[in-house]
Length: 226
Image 1 (spheres, rainbow, N blue to C red):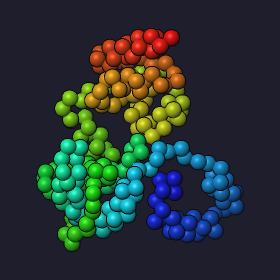
Image 2: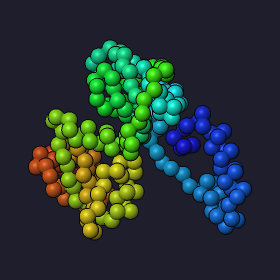
Image 3: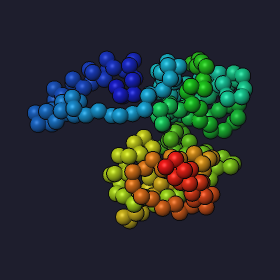
Image 4: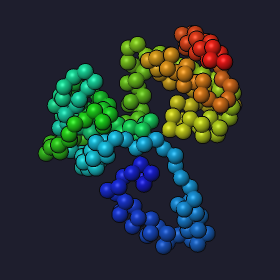
């Protein structure tokens, strides 16, 4: 939580940490302090300033199960007022997202916080669906978007190494027996080919063919630099 700069929660976190340490056995207490002092999380920047300012109001709405009114600003549209039942939040690639039921679209939707101009807590309440997972909803909606391509890449490395190198993108990794795969959905094979080139280990593209072609073009471009 501290690494994600949830500064409003810091006093509570410090208090809880102190209480836990007081009741821990000495050897566990020493280990916990060592982790706190010597372990760091190298995360992307934790969102833009406006994202940080919206985190606590939205967390309060999720906790109390109260509807919010938001002003959504799209890439090519002015601010649009919507009412949202906020079910949950997640953090992905340097940005915060909130998922829930959008009353304008009458469907589950996910919004990136830097696209929200303001948030107002309303009196109306809601009941959150059991076992709702905001990140899983986002992945499912991403797969359903028209024009997106399913990607499957075999990695010639072990899971620990792949997880360490992918960092916050490690959620796209899957394991089948001893084989490690990247499985995700992309809307640009050219961009993803560029992203694959940075990996420090070998890999084999299983699908789609358009990604194989994009990687060949990228390889020829890199060779041209020599």
